[in-house]
Structures are given as structure tokens and as C-alpha cells.
Image 1 (spheres, helix red, strand yellow):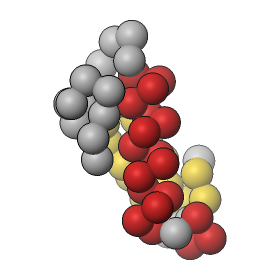
Image 2 (tube, one colour):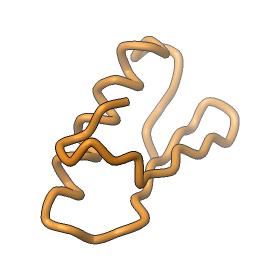
Image 3 (cartoon, rainbow, N blue to C red):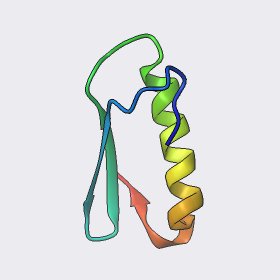
Length: 53
């Protein structure tokens, strides 16, 4: 998924249908990038098919 800094410094982990996301770095764009990644994940997976942790 694209991010604000065009970096992919995040991890998506799943346990059943519970999904979590974490970033490698704590740079100023981390929260924005997390939102962008979550949005793209929701589009691809379908919001009704999983829960965020």
C-alpha cells in the first residue's frame, strides 16, 4: 500500500479474523501512514471480514 513517505515500514499481523498493524519507525508521518495502510487493507479485505485490534 502507498504511504505518505512512499515507504513500507509497517507490519500487518492477523490472529484469526483479528488484524493489527504496527510501524517500524516513529517518524512524524507514522500515524498518517497507518491510516493510509488501514484504509487500503479495508478496501482489499472488506470491512465486514475482520476486526482491528
